[in-house]
Amino acid sequence: MLRVVVLGAGAGGGVPQWNCGCEGCRAARSYGHELHRTQASVAFSGDGEHWFLINASPDLRQQLNATPQLHPKAGALRHTPVAGVILTNGEVDAVAGLLSMREGSPFTVYAHEKVLAILASNSIFNVLNEKNVKRQPIGVSEPFEPRLPDGARSGLEVRPFAVPGKSAWYLEGKAHPGGETGDGDTLGLKITDKATGKCFYFIAACAEVTDALKAEIDGAALVFFDGTVWQDDEMIRAGLGHKTGKSMGHVAMSGADGAIARLADLDIDRKIFLHINNSNPALLPGSSERKTVEQAGWQIPGDGTEIVL
Picture 1: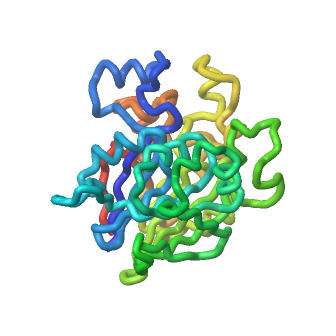
Picture 2: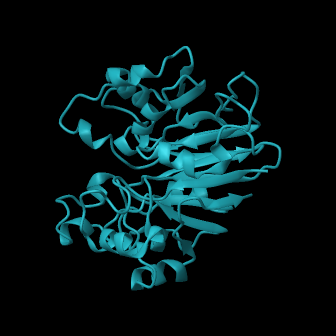
């Protein structure tokens, strides 16, 4: 049985963002925790005992403490159900949480060589002692079975695939530690329980919905998809930044080329937006944008949402 828990549904900075006074952040501060979102990550498990994280957000310590499934087992002095972390990109909101896992528990970091090169180039990640924390390269379109800390099989299959995107923003204008050519900076994942055949997709960053991507996820039982912005120039209009969503590697929810329209003709049982920015009005219950999202069959999850496939 494949279990998935949404640890965080927000984009970088979360909701409310510490230094932001936009409408979404003001509403989150005023109306309570039901509007709060930590930064995007999910956990999944095939047995309910051993869990793998997709991305390690800066809010990871808070997320682990808020998720009973990821607490140390009763009576154990040191223990974690977390067996591994799979990184889909090298952005701060995907890798910074690794630094909160430096206390000596064994697990494996799975990432494309381009992302592993980013970690290797920054000595702060050396606090993760490689005797305990292995770094395992993964390849585009190369399925692998993540292992448990003792080396046992997990019974799960992860297939990474390339999606349109870009390298981490902090590398703009700088030499990429993993080289400038080839895919690997932005990955989607297909996660399958080998015993049941149940699967889900995770695509937290996507700059364009291509026909190839549509063919990949058509017929899926569950898709987590990039919901960063409602419209491409949203942050510019709101006075919150100078970049479009697409220039940051994120397709908008709305518009003719947006996720809602481009994925509308697909047979997907459950469609969930995550990595939702504080500027996105679809976060606000009762907004016209939220109504449009829900009428189109999409969900805006809260942190802690659990799904069983």
